[in-house]
Length: 235
Image 1 (tube, rainbow, N blue to C red):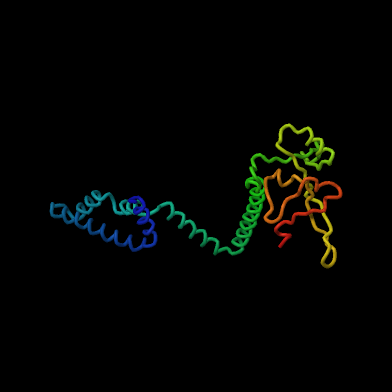
Image 2: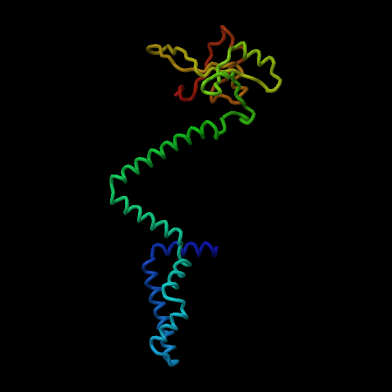
């Protein structure tokens, strides 16, 4: 608590710096004059009395600087001085200021966009049950000119992997780039859909807000006319 009070006093000193400096200068001058008077009573000449008084106080300016450092926040004061100097320099050259501001804005926007992508793709945990145990499997084209290239795999490959699986608790397949025709009210509309196996939601460990997930066999031909709407599409 005592340390907090000290920091608050130092911070408040930044807003009354001129007044506090004037008060301290007046107090220091009174102490200096008191030492000079003592030296004069001791028989010293006026010049020697002042010199000895300054030696005893350690120098006027040195003492002022020492007190300023103890009662203020030197690093913050230097930062504020640098900011004021920077503003003055930029105001003298509006053309350079405009270019610098535009460059900073573009740099900040680019960094914010990249961070948002990285955060969404790599840092945030996916909204599924037990995400540390969920992995994505895909085929790879080793001769791609762009390095490792993930390719879609066929249904026979999925069934073969699922049959030979000895590592995962379960496997589901999904095609996130499919489309379908929406009809019933007005003109037909082509909408993006994700085709999945019936166990897709159970593998991810999630359930819909309303209704149910797919039942076994609803991914088979003739029974695949069942959909689950996303919240955005439902709205």
